[in-house]
Length: 278
Image (cartoon, rainbow, N blue to C red):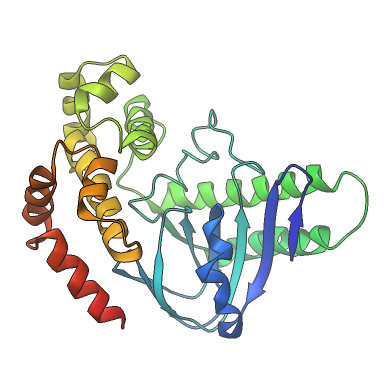
């Protein structure tokens, strides 16, 4: 079921089966998605990476993820656009928080057995409210969505033991990741993001070294590479155009970057992937 306001705030809530899988081609491209597997083990290909989703496992997707293939029995899906709910200043629950960390990775949680009733209760309330014609519907739907996100964040924090999520430095890394997601096609140097965060590049590098196994420049390059793969796979834009869009100084620089990361020139990657999809 879909709820839409006159200023295009959109919320979609529905249980889906394979017969309704057409929604993955279009409906899930308009915003942020919560995909809860309620059936047998499911398998997705997302941005050319295989993702296994066990029963009562939830993944969180942005509009930038591309679902190439999938096999599932039944899913509960909540999908909403940023006009409906974003809250950028909220570091945990917002669209730059823990669950929607960025287009290059897919957060995942498994609902603990003892907490499943809580998730199911909020889900049932969402399904009921989106179908009602009573007043304050928008406010109620936003409140229920936030409740679902809060439950998810609580589980995520307990299950992702490797990240000290309440640490001020970890919040800085999340902010950096969000800025990369926003500006990867414009800013290509760590110094650009250090300036936005009012930190020195050396400080950022030291913080990353302490907390995660990637450097600041790796995050930038991974996001640019992911977008390059998406453009080569899903569009007919020329390699020159893609190089320009991703702010490479010329085609040669882009081709060298792409081959260094993938082992293939951009043209070969496009040909190989196109053939595999035919």
